[in-house]
Length: 258
Ligand code: COA
Image (cartoon, helix red, strand yellow):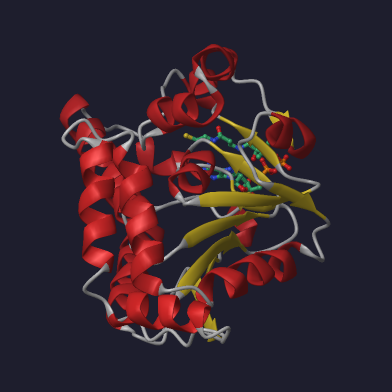
Protein backbone atom coordinates (compact mmCIF):
# COMPACT_ATOMS: atom_id res chain seq x y z
CA UNK A 1 0.00 0.00 0.00
CA UNK A 2 2.89 2.37 0.80
CA UNK A 3 6.14 2.78 -1.11
CA UNK A 4 8.40 3.73 1.82
CA UNK A 5 6.47 2.58 4.89
CA UNK A 6 5.42 -0.80 6.20
CA UNK A 7 2.38 -0.89 8.45
CA UNK A 8 1.03 -3.68 10.58
CA UNK A 9 -1.93 -3.76 12.97
CA UNK A 10 -2.04 -6.38 15.71
CA UNK A 11 -3.86 -6.37 19.04
CA UNK A 12 -4.70 -2.67 18.65
CA UNK A 13 -1.05 -1.71 18.13
CA UNK A 14 -0.26 -0.15 14.74
CA UNK A 15 3.42 -0.42 13.82
CA UNK A 16 4.70 2.07 11.26
CA UNK A 17 8.13 1.09 9.91
CA UNK A 18 10.01 3.62 7.80
CA UNK A 19 11.29 1.43 5.04
CA UNK A 20 14.25 2.82 3.08
CA UNK A 21 17.00 0.77 4.74
CA UNK A 22 19.50 1.31 1.88
CA UNK A 23 19.28 5.07 2.63
CA UNK A 24 19.18 4.52 6.39
CA UNK A 25 15.47 5.42 6.28
CA UNK A 26 16.17 9.09 5.48
CA UNK A 27 13.01 11.19 5.43
CA UNK A 28 12.27 12.26 1.89
CA UNK A 29 9.11 13.75 0.41
CA UNK A 30 7.52 10.36 -0.15
CA UNK A 31 8.10 9.31 3.47
CA UNK A 32 6.49 12.53 4.72
CA UNK A 33 3.49 12.15 2.42
CA UNK A 34 3.06 8.56 3.51
CA UNK A 35 3.57 9.35 7.20
CA UNK A 36 0.70 11.84 6.89
CA UNK A 37 -1.45 9.19 5.21
CA UNK A 38 -0.59 6.70 7.97
CA UNK A 39 -1.55 9.33 10.57
CA UNK A 40 -4.89 9.76 8.77
CA UNK A 41 -5.33 6.02 9.16
CA UNK A 42 -4.48 6.24 12.88
CA UNK A 43 -7.24 8.83 13.25
CA UNK A 44 -9.89 7.02 11.25
CA UNK A 45 -9.34 3.36 12.15
CA UNK A 46 -11.04 2.62 15.47
CA UNK A 47 -9.15 -0.65 15.80
CA UNK A 48 -5.90 1.30 16.22
CA UNK A 49 -5.40 2.01 19.92
CA UNK A 50 -1.74 3.02 19.89
CA UNK A 51 1.23 3.31 17.55
CA UNK A 52 4.90 2.34 17.33
CA UNK A 53 7.17 4.19 14.90
CA UNK A 54 10.39 2.37 14.02
CA UNK A 55 12.89 1.98 11.17
CA UNK A 56 13.61 -0.94 8.83
CA UNK A 57 16.92 -2.79 8.96
CA UNK A 58 19.45 -3.30 11.71
CA UNK A 59 21.33 -0.01 11.35
CA UNK A 60 19.02 2.97 11.51
CA UNK A 61 15.81 4.31 12.95
CA UNK A 62 16.12 7.33 10.65
CA UNK A 63 19.47 8.94 9.70
CA UNK A 64 17.88 12.33 9.07
CA UNK A 65 16.03 14.31 6.48
CA UNK A 66 17.05 13.24 3.00
CA UNK A 67 20.02 15.49 2.30
CA UNK A 68 19.70 15.00 -1.47
CA UNK A 69 16.45 17.00 -1.38
CA UNK A 70 18.18 20.07 0.14
CA UNK A 71 20.08 20.86 -3.04
CA UNK A 72 19.35 24.29 -4.53
CA UNK A 73 16.53 25.29 -2.16
CA UNK A 74 15.84 29.00 -1.67
CA UNK A 75 15.30 30.58 1.76
CA UNK A 76 11.55 30.47 1.15
CA UNK A 77 11.66 26.81 0.11
CA UNK A 78 13.84 25.97 3.12
CA UNK A 79 11.29 27.60 5.41
CA UNK A 80 8.44 25.76 3.70
CA UNK A 81 10.27 22.45 4.12
CA UNK A 82 10.77 23.09 7.85
CA UNK A 83 7.16 24.19 8.32
CA UNK A 84 5.78 21.10 6.58
CA UNK A 85 8.03 18.82 8.63
CA UNK A 86 7.02 20.57 11.85
CA UNK A 87 3.34 20.19 10.96
CA UNK A 88 3.70 16.42 10.49
CA UNK A 89 5.60 16.11 13.76
CA UNK A 90 2.95 18.20 15.59
CA UNK A 91 0.37 15.72 14.30
CA UNK A 92 2.33 12.97 16.05
CA UNK A 93 2.94 14.94 19.25
CA UNK A 94 -0.69 16.06 19.51
CA UNK A 95 -2.17 12.73 18.54
CA UNK A 96 -4.62 11.57 21.18
CA UNK A 97 -3.62 7.93 20.65
CA UNK A 98 -0.26 7.07 22.25
CA UNK A 99 2.62 7.07 19.75
CA UNK A 100 6.03 5.80 20.85
CA UNK A 101 9.33 5.60 19.00
CA UNK A 102 11.24 2.30 19.00
CA UNK A 103 14.71 3.52 18.07
CA UNK A 104 16.70 0.70 16.48
CA UNK A 105 19.94 2.42 15.43
CA UNK A 106 20.88 5.90 14.17
CA UNK A 107 18.35 8.60 15.09
CA UNK A 108 20.06 11.64 13.63
CA UNK A 109 18.78 15.04 12.59
CA UNK A 110 15.19 14.59 11.41
CA UNK A 111 15.33 11.06 12.87
CA UNK A 112 16.10 12.36 16.34
CA UNK A 113 13.37 14.98 15.80
CA UNK A 114 10.90 12.27 14.77
CA UNK A 115 11.73 10.25 17.89
CA UNK A 116 11.37 13.37 20.05
CA UNK A 117 7.90 14.29 18.78
CA UNK A 118 6.64 10.84 19.82
CA UNK A 119 5.07 10.64 23.29
CA UNK A 120 8.10 8.75 24.59
CA UNK A 121 10.97 6.66 23.30
CA UNK A 122 12.60 3.32 23.88
CA UNK A 123 15.90 2.35 22.26
CA UNK A 124 17.99 -0.66 21.39
CA UNK A 125 21.51 -0.72 22.80
CA UNK A 126 23.00 0.08 19.35
CA UNK A 127 21.00 3.35 19.05
CA UNK A 128 22.79 6.64 18.49
CA UNK A 129 21.13 10.03 18.82
CA UNK A 130 22.21 13.45 17.65
CA UNK A 131 21.49 16.64 15.77
CA UNK A 132 24.46 16.81 13.35
CA UNK A 133 22.99 19.58 11.18
CA UNK A 134 25.81 22.05 11.93
CA UNK A 135 28.10 19.64 10.06
CA UNK A 136 26.04 20.56 6.98
CA UNK A 137 25.86 24.30 7.67
CA UNK A 138 22.28 23.87 8.87
CA UNK A 139 20.25 23.84 12.04
CA UNK A 140 17.49 21.37 12.92
CA UNK A 141 14.23 22.38 11.21
CA UNK A 142 11.65 19.87 12.42
CA UNK A 143 11.39 21.03 16.04
CA UNK A 144 14.75 19.70 17.24
CA UNK A 145 15.97 22.91 18.84
CA UNK A 146 12.77 23.08 20.88
CA UNK A 147 12.14 19.48 21.89
CA UNK A 148 15.76 18.64 22.72
CA UNK A 149 15.75 21.52 25.23
CA UNK A 150 12.39 20.33 26.61
CA UNK A 151 13.55 16.73 26.99
CA UNK A 152 17.14 16.96 28.26
CA UNK A 153 17.50 20.56 29.47
CA UNK A 154 19.03 23.61 27.86
CA UNK A 155 22.72 23.19 28.73
CA UNK A 156 23.16 19.66 27.38
CA UNK A 157 20.85 20.41 24.42
CA UNK A 158 22.94 23.46 23.50
CA UNK A 159 26.10 21.34 23.61
CA UNK A 160 24.66 18.63 21.36
CA UNK A 161 23.13 21.14 18.91
CA UNK A 162 26.32 23.18 18.58
CA UNK A 163 28.87 20.35 18.60
CA UNK A 164 26.96 17.79 16.46
CA UNK A 165 28.23 15.13 18.87
CA UNK A 166 26.28 11.89 18.90
CA UNK A 167 25.28 10.12 22.10
CA UNK A 168 24.83 6.40 22.59
CA UNK A 169 21.82 4.64 24.07
CA UNK A 170 23.24 4.53 27.60
CA UNK A 171 23.83 8.30 27.57
CA UNK A 172 20.36 8.88 26.08
CA UNK A 173 18.92 6.89 28.98
CA UNK A 174 20.97 8.84 31.50
CA UNK A 175 19.72 12.12 29.98
CA UNK A 176 16.13 10.79 29.98
CA UNK A 177 15.86 11.18 26.23
CA UNK A 178 14.70 7.54 26.24
CA UNK A 179 12.75 5.63 28.86
CA UNK A 180 14.29 2.18 28.34
CA UNK A 181 17.23 0.56 26.58
CA UNK A 182 17.03 -3.05 25.51
CA UNK A 183 18.54 -5.42 22.94
CA UNK A 184 17.64 -5.01 19.24
CA UNK A 185 15.78 -8.36 19.40
CA UNK A 186 13.71 -7.23 22.37
CA UNK A 187 12.95 -3.69 21.15
CA UNK A 188 9.53 -4.24 19.56
CA UNK A 189 8.60 -6.78 22.23
CA UNK A 190 9.29 -4.18 24.92
CA UNK A 191 7.40 -1.48 22.99
CA UNK A 192 4.39 -3.76 22.62
CA UNK A 193 4.55 -4.75 26.29
CA UNK A 194 4.29 -1.10 27.36
CA UNK A 195 1.54 -0.29 24.86
CA UNK A 196 -0.45 -3.37 25.90
CA UNK A 197 -0.56 -1.94 29.43
CA UNK A 198 -1.57 1.50 28.14
CA UNK A 199 -4.18 -0.01 25.80
CA UNK A 200 -5.90 -1.63 28.79
CA UNK A 201 -6.59 1.81 30.34
CA UNK A 202 -9.48 4.16 29.58
CA UNK A 203 -8.63 5.63 26.13
CA UNK A 204 -10.28 9.01 26.71
CA UNK A 205 -8.41 9.38 30.00
CA UNK A 206 -5.15 8.45 28.26
CA UNK A 207 -5.94 11.09 25.62
CA UNK A 208 -6.57 13.60 28.42
CA UNK A 209 -3.12 12.85 29.89
CA UNK A 210 -1.50 13.49 26.50
CA UNK A 211 -3.34 16.81 26.03
CA UNK A 212 -2.60 18.07 29.55
CA UNK A 213 1.08 17.04 29.50
CA UNK A 214 1.54 18.64 26.05
CA UNK A 215 -0.02 21.86 27.39
CA UNK A 216 3.09 22.39 29.58
CA UNK A 217 4.96 23.40 26.43
CA UNK A 218 2.13 25.17 24.61
CA UNK A 219 2.15 28.91 25.18
CA UNK A 220 -1.41 29.23 23.91
CA UNK A 221 -2.66 27.17 26.85
CA UNK A 222 -2.50 27.21 30.63
CA UNK A 223 -1.62 23.61 31.48
CA UNK A 224 -3.42 23.69 34.83
CA UNK A 225 -6.58 24.94 33.11
CA UNK A 226 -6.24 22.21 30.48
CA UNK A 227 -5.94 19.68 33.30
CA UNK A 228 -9.10 21.02 34.97
CA UNK A 229 -11.03 20.83 31.69
CA UNK A 230 -9.80 17.30 30.87
CA UNK A 231 -10.45 16.09 34.43
CA UNK A 232 -13.98 17.50 34.33
CA UNK A 233 -14.65 15.99 30.90
CA UNK A 234 -13.88 12.51 32.26
CA UNK A 235 -16.99 12.72 34.47
CA UNK A 236 -19.30 12.55 31.48
CA UNK A 237 -17.62 9.45 30.03
CA UNK A 238 -18.99 5.93 30.37
CA UNK A 239 -15.47 4.70 31.07
CA UNK A 240 -15.15 6.86 34.19
CA UNK A 241 -18.39 5.37 35.53
CA UNK A 242 -17.15 1.89 34.60
CA UNK A 243 -13.68 2.44 36.12
CA UNK A 244 -14.88 3.78 39.46
CA UNK A 245 -17.73 1.22 39.75
CA UNK A 246 -15.39 -1.67 38.90
CA UNK A 247 -12.93 -0.48 41.55
CA UNK A 248 -15.61 -0.32 44.23
CA UNK A 249 -16.92 -3.77 43.21
CA UNK A 250 -13.36 -5.16 43.15
CA UNK A 251 -13.78 -6.07 39.45
CA UNK A 252 -11.54 -5.40 36.44
CA UNK A 253 -12.86 -2.46 34.43
CA UNK A 254 -13.91 -3.09 30.83
CA UNK A 255 -13.25 0.18 29.03
CA UNK A 256 -14.97 1.04 25.77
CA UNK A 257 -13.45 4.42 24.90
CA UNK A 258 -16.73 6.30 25.35
N1 COA B 1 20.05 11.69 3.59
C1 COA B 1 20.23 11.03 2.43
N2 COA B 1 20.93 9.89 2.34
C2 COA B 1 21.45 9.39 3.48
C3 COA B 1 21.29 10.03 4.72
C4 COA B 1 20.56 11.25 4.74
N3 COA B 1 20.33 11.90 5.88
N4 COA B 1 21.94 9.30 5.68
C5 COA B 1 22.47 8.24 5.04
N5 COA B 1 22.17 8.29 3.71
C6 COA B 1 22.55 7.32 2.67
C7 COA B 1 24.02 7.45 2.30
O1 COA B 1 24.22 8.50 1.37
C8 COA B 1 24.28 6.09 1.71
O2 COA B 1 23.74 6.05 0.41
P1 COA B 1 24.59 5.38 -0.82
O3 COA B 1 24.75 3.94 -0.41
O4 COA B 1 23.69 5.57 -2.00
O5 COA B 1 25.89 6.12 -0.87
C9 COA B 1 23.43 5.17 2.57
O6 COA B 1 22.44 6.00 3.16
C10 COA B 1 24.20 4.49 3.68
O7 COA B 1 24.86 5.48 4.45
P2 COA B 1 26.44 5.52 4.72
O8 COA B 1 26.83 6.93 4.98
O9 COA B 1 27.17 4.79 3.61
O10 COA B 1 26.52 4.64 6.05
P3 COA B 1 27.66 4.71 7.19
O11 COA B 1 27.43 3.54 8.06
O12 COA B 1 29.00 4.89 6.57
O13 COA B 1 27.32 6.06 8.01
C11 COA B 1 25.89 7.66 9.13
C12 COA B 1 26.14 6.18 8.74
C13 COA B 1 24.53 7.75 9.76
C14 COA B 1 26.98 8.10 10.13
C15 COA B 1 25.98 8.52 7.85
O14 COA B 1 25.12 7.97 6.88
C16 COA B 1 25.56 9.96 8.05
O15 COA B 1 26.31 10.74 8.61
N6 COA B 1 24.35 10.34 7.58
C17 COA B 1 23.85 11.68 7.61
C18 COA B 1 23.43 12.07 9.00
C19 COA B 1 22.94 13.52 9.03
O16 COA B 1 23.70 14.44 8.83
N7 COA B 1 21.66 13.67 9.29
C20 COA B 1 21.05 14.97 9.38
C21 COA B 1 20.45 15.33 8.10
S1 COA B 1 19.67 16.92 8.20
